[in-house]
Amino acid sequence: MKKLTLKLKLLASLMMMSLPLSVLANDTLKAINAEGNSHIESVQLISKTDIPKADRLVSYKHKGIALENNQGKTLSLLKGNFGSIDQRQLKHGLLLATVDLDRQQAMLTVLNDGSDNWTAATYLPKPAFKIEGVCLYQDEAQNGFLFLVGEQGQGEQWLVADATSPIALPQLIRHLSTPPDSEYCQVDDAQSRLYINEENVGIWAYDAHPEADLSRYPIAMTQPFGQLKESAAGMAIVPGGLLVLDAKANVLHTYIDNKGSWQHQSEFALHNVLEPEGISARVEGEQLEVAIKHDAGIAFYTLPWTHTSLTSPPPIPLVKPAIQTDAVPSLGDAADDPAIWVNKANPEQSLILGTDKQGGLVVYDLKGKTQQFLPVGRLNNVDVRHGFHFNGKQIDLAVASNRDHNSLHVFAIDPENRFVTEMGEVSTTAQDIYGLCMYKNKQGDIYTIVNDKDGRFFQYQMQDKQGKIAGELVREFKVATQPEGCVADDKHDRLFIGEENRAVWTLDARADQSTVMTQVMPVGEHLKDDIEGISLYQNDKQDYLVISSQGNDSYVVLDALPPFTYRGVFRIGFNTAAGIDGVSETDGLDVSSVNFGQPWQQGMLVVQDGRNRMPLENQNFKYVPWSEIADQLGLSKLSK
Image (cartoon, rainbow, N blue to C red; front, side, top):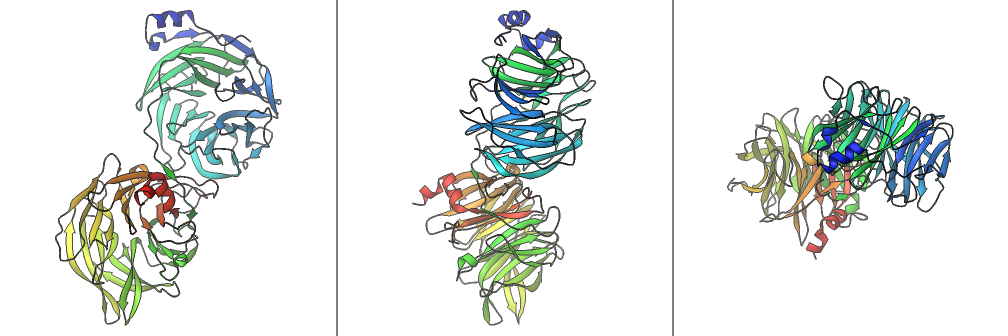
């Protein structure tokens, strides 16, 4: 087979005249080379930097998957009966995903660097649908995910590999509701974008990230809504755009991504091609090398291509959760806010209190196991303070906002047996109670600050009234729009509050002081609305404010003392080895600098996870060692 060097005369002359590619609309594209074989199922061109001696992977019915050079010579053969294929480069080899047609199961294997042999196959469980297409995706941490697409509108996403190799037991991340009549998919790793065809409708784009919502938008539609004449089949991702096959019309279309606004660029009639289906492309200089699988074999083309990939923002550092809790009892959007109760006598026996806003309060140990569930109603936020004098003894206090009764729901934590008991409720003047935090002043008085969705805050001093829990309203203040998260810095008598769509503010926490507020950080470059959970990490050397930036699933860290210097942002990704998914749409969080033992010597961060993907269960909470955060953001150096 001759080297792929076709330059169409018309294309070459137009390029010399510096005419745009769109001028070539309706031209005929002729193959520079073709290989006839009606038993070919799929073809994938390989980057020449991945395996320099190889050109492509070809799946042959009843024969296997061949690694071939550009003369069509087989360099390695994986025997079997396979269908759709996709590939990604791992640290030490080429990851291949395919469908074993005899077993109707997705399969993974690796061609290790410097070897012509494939590793032992890893099979995914057989799904409840016939697999038509497979496509791989690597996230920002190089974890490998596999999408399975079925013709009847069913799909799945699986975690299948880390950055070096396939994992022993692939994990189902989510079920997908995909378009009917779908057979082809591709993923743009850099943009975390999944493309799926709907044969008679067009090409749809989804967010490929495992923590993303399942929503879609159109890229290339059939007439009269778009330029595709009859159908949408295979597609290939190219820098700054997409190639799409109109199979029934024998036409190749090119689309350009203009910062999210997709534009049809050109269309080419395909010469001597019989019902084209699959397509693969790679960049070579300022042109594309294209392989199209059709009923009679493979046709190869080149196209001029000067477009570049969209610039992606700098990646946000990732940390891994070390522990995840049992799921909360309630379905849907239920878990909300955690609070860390420190067992001062034995920190390793500390507890995490988490609200189930559909049903009550869950108590976890540091291994994430449920110790208690108190089904007391719709609790939204919770906080704790040590050393409350009640009925002649000292107890530790937990208070939660109860949305059923617009009340403060109060609990006692026994320091000796680590048991949480209900103490009662304190009525409030809130009409739609929401966020909550607690504050203890230098005199030992404990306050609960609660807010209403209309922006009002109410500060109550917690009291023992003849053996019954009570609260006295001592102060009110207000922000312009809906707040939720808040945290008190007892050491400096400072209160931080989050106005969800506007900013984080601070004011004096003392009940007899001014309520004039100072802006800490507005929504903008680093902080993306909604502003949700807020907490303080404090030790002898540093005070940090940690904020849930829900709009981009991240966490912002600031100095908790003026001028509130920005220290960085991070996300919580997958811990593939531990089988723990990443975190998205965090509502509440809490953080502590206490040494809880390995791996929490520098403290821990606890966050609510809006989507519990692995396993697929009700929402839960994730625990992250503070040491990981400090290392990623360089905070360890600041504290020395």
